[in-house]
Length: 390
Image (cartoon, rainbow, N blue to C red; front, side, top):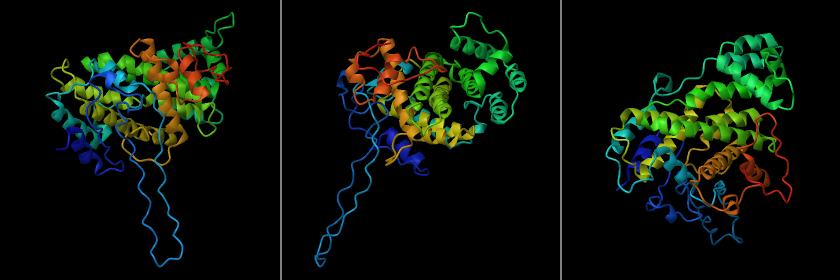
């Protein structure tokens, strides 16, 4: 009999372009020690199927065998040799996955299915684009936008004023005199710097909104991880000519926005938040969250490459190619989670095991993620003796 998870995805994805993912065999996540070094993390679950076999041989009458064409091999993401995702979701939910289904799982599955099929702009649980973002970004696109125009817009939001001044003074920490003029701060940050400050300040209330029991527990962690992921994306984009740094930052900052919506559903509908969910339902939450992030980004009219990268994080598709930003976002997300889990002593693993398979820049980013700043990142090639840790 098909599991709850499989029934949900055959139901939802039958009318969408993403094929339903394949469930893993068994439930190995009830005990972290059962997670082998190379098994999939929480949302991988046999993400890519094996290549098909060679085509049939040429007919006997043909003097030489016909050339056979194999389909392109599915793209394979990097994954750490540690159960990073199971531990991260255990942290968010407060419990490891249970062996038995939660009594409400079928009811919650129906609610999530209805949410995915609804018009998002009509759903009160789905966050709205912060009102200050469109006019500010529109003004920044103008070729001759004046400092006074930008200053007037920024002054509508006191939190944004404070963050702009803080950002400038953090960057110019070597200056003796503190910058207190908003005009001067805007001029110093410039167009690119303002984009980052605006995005960070405007989206923070959405990702850090604490409502019911699930959101209160998870939202601060999600926001902290999103900030680190955005920072890692921005840092690593400096080594990728195909990725715009601001777009990379946006993708990292907003990749968990669907998860916030999922937790709001749980806040409203779960009657007993002390009961853990089953592995199948945890998998379902992750894929629904990634799907919602993509739809929300589309609703907000974010850049096409950001939407594509978010869509590429949805498990279950057999992708033969993935965009540069999609790969970067995937790796930065895991790097940020590893850094947070290590900081909280929720993950204990040797650094060489965690970083196996990462580039020198990605390993450097992981080690120094707690200390990197958005405006003065310089991920130069680490020296051979550089083994610093955060």
